[in-house]
Length: 330
Image (cartoon, rainbow, N blue to C red; front, side):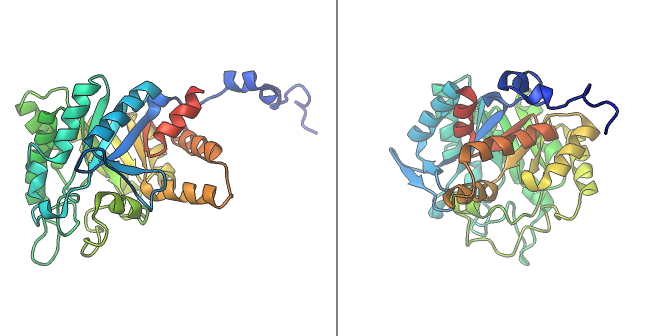
């Protein structure tokens, strides 16, 4: 028998709910959540997304209503992703530079209606291109790094001018963080944050998201020449180091649960704000589990979000944000 027994009983502090709360090492609140929202053209439009049960595309009036809901629930920030009409998609994704595009109009509407809510905007070309890639491609289908970065600068400035609080480059082009930071500073947009998708992996978990933004079926080839190989961890640390040196205010690891080890290593190495994106495939798996009767939604949602916080995340982008906030506020 252990010599410390019964003087040391670790179950003592677990014996009652008040004590478990008192001794909790990790705290999860609605303020730790960012709610991703999908925008579609029209008015009074809600389009359920079949591969993301419980998630819809909303016209701008609906997005504003979701923004008000987020504020009421204590969620500090929403992330916007557009469903670009097919006739506006081009090889060069030029709609991303339109100051009156769907993303910019939704941003302005939210900042007008709920000015104290943070708005995060996605900087990448995949919602706007006919080929589904995050950047410009050459004749062989290779995504061009520097030419793409030049367009991303204009896209980030366009979003910042519309009122975005955080621009989040999700494209994984080399050098684009420094270029965007320099352009923002040049315009006097000193307080616009950059949340870099610094360690974004070429993952099989993105399928439902591509349905949501209308790029499923358009993609020619894959994204493995610019998104990270899921076998690599040291490379993720190099990506994060570069983006921080170039002016990122925070970094993201994407996907989430399959890459908790990367989150831990980034947090321990750099001691900076680290965010995770609990991506569409992760959300869909949880919902499929619930639908099959294999788990309780409330318990699964809170447990997975707590895992991100325990690993070192400052916050999590999750489609379960509103549901989780209601649970946490109860």
